[in-house]
Image (cartoon, rainbow, N blue to C red; front, side, top):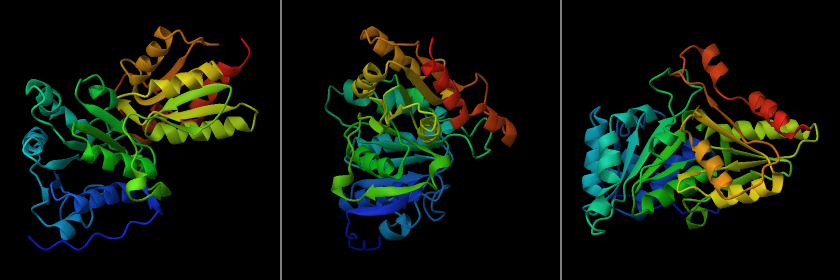
Length: 338
């Protein structure tokens, strides 16, 4: 195993792409903790299918960064075994759709192991999964998988929409003693933004972020839909409609307190997710607020995908994905006089 280079100095703020933020988070955690390992399909010499692991094999060597066979249930299972025996593995799932292949390992093993051991074993396993539309990958390579796992006790689910969150939440996930499903969106990898690098950039799991303050309506979104909600809010602002945008960031645990405070202020709510709204996380948000007795000025609304697989056709994919225009149109309906 080659000797590791000394850790690079961490500066306060850097302008990074979402892709670079993901890679840098792993680099910093691997440099700080020799028990952090990285493996998955093509993460070594190829640098990852979406180039999020470039240079990590060269820096940390093949004992800590290595490629696996195309067998998700197998190598997630290996990650569980490593996690309960003193390592902190980071497992990459090339497309979030392939999490279905590893469903047993994630749901029945990783999420339940600590409970079934009576708390004797921790499972510090991070599963990075890449999903979402806009890439023209078709029905089997475009899922975000957010709500597939949101209701699994013992599993944390994170979905990041910005470079700063990608960096801060991934470092937190790797340090967490529990299994964390860390969802990335392939359509965001080239987005650029300021990232607070170093210990000060860490973000706690379970905290939503108000990305834009507003007074007339609340939009709650995740992943790529945050960007589109912000674009819709900016467009509506030109017409005097003031929209608050909340990035949920964490699906499980969910920061309902931040959402509730916003809706109590605005009285109107729209949830936007890149998955079918039936059984989506938006249902949980709305139901929780109703149970809490939050008074809505208008009935809450939901936007998501239609109930059929993602089309491969570029024209059809664009048509089914929620757009800034469709979000803005729904917001107009919410705020117009009854």
